[in-house]
Length: 280
Image (cartoon, rainbow, N blue to C red):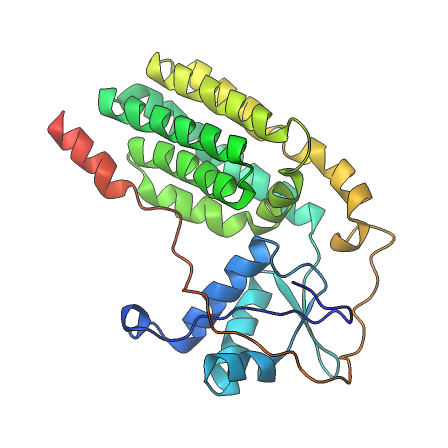
């Protein structure tokens, strides 16, 4: 949650037995990336090396390494003498990411429609049921996570599980907009309707129809951005109301809590899909 002066109260994972083999810089990068993409840390928020280092019980070196990696991903902006700020959402970066995503997912859904078995279709329909339940419960973060699993599962059914890793890496700016759009009336219902059409096309073994439904689904992302820029002008680079990053505030650093586990990658369904295929 952002404070009034633009700094952010962050929850950083403390070391545990399950993550001792993970370098500190990678662990910090993973947690910060998850919170930035999930909009827990909003665009424009100040990130302080000292604050993060104290929360994680490490020196500033791994924190600096994590922030440099986030800067390479265009998720933070580093201004010498001023500080490090969460980057604002870039519409050009979103356009590039959607071009990459459409190219990869249209290939994946065609292959899924060609090779999907009964167990694969059942898995996809089960994900639809889960997503419907999350929509009804108003659990937006969980709904988004289930959306990710749905698309990842299609890549796994297609026989290209690493494809989704590439898509996920490229679409961070897109995901921040998707998170912002989920409370909008009708948005989640539209996603569910599109997902249902995609599953139906895969179940029919029709690659052309599957590709068309996927492209129709993905094609609705960018047109929704204009309304988001109006609603959240300071979150976007291209908005005339986006201010320049302010100087680092001369105020006490907020107390951090190391109470978050490291983020898991999008749910791993590879083994489940593989098991279903071997069983069939």
